[in-house]
Length: 293
Image: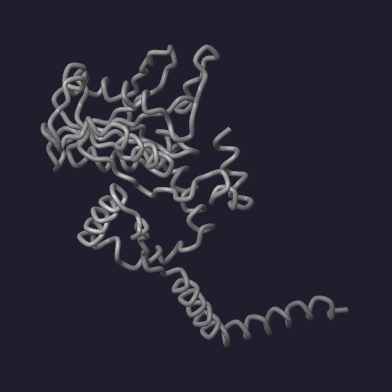
């Protein structure tokens, strides 16, 4: 009558003894497997330039890009993923935890301003000013950093909040531009339009507002993910605003700040409808669709 109760105890005892004898080899095997899997993710950065056979402007641009690559060591280094989260799924889970931290455990760093655009639409600008008494004093000559968020996030995302805080701690004034339909600002039917990569005319009005709020300062446009495409396109179409050339009369007359640089942070490549976006599989595609809609 004691057999049914003795069998589980004996089985548990045997399993415990097996675990005690084999846990070190098992742990070693797990560590070795982790290292091998990690090393498979190490990649050397590859930069592809324009076709050598291209002439004229394309050839000149290629030469300029080659000189930039040659002087920028990070573009020739190996990429070593974060050792504790080196796969896409692990990084997505880590990002989710960071989002929870930013939204529920940290104080909102922003001062919000609603900007009325010319066509009647409204967008939200979220400002972060350098803290008083910080180790990095507020910069009176450094640029105002205009941050452009990604496709499935806005100023509330952990990426924008952490980046804005880091720049403000270094004495820089920061403003996050929420594109149309983002930042909990509703699209009105009379002016409803939106684009994943934003509208250059909207950023024109944001820069004008920056010029009114913080006069005499250059701007650095910093884009993340889709925002990096927005930033790069804007720098190309607004070359007359460059801080590296003579100021143009229209920009000076309208108090438009000059564009010091455009920064692409985690840019996306091959973003055509038939490109990388079409190859995103579930569950990542579900997350993207839900976030965008």
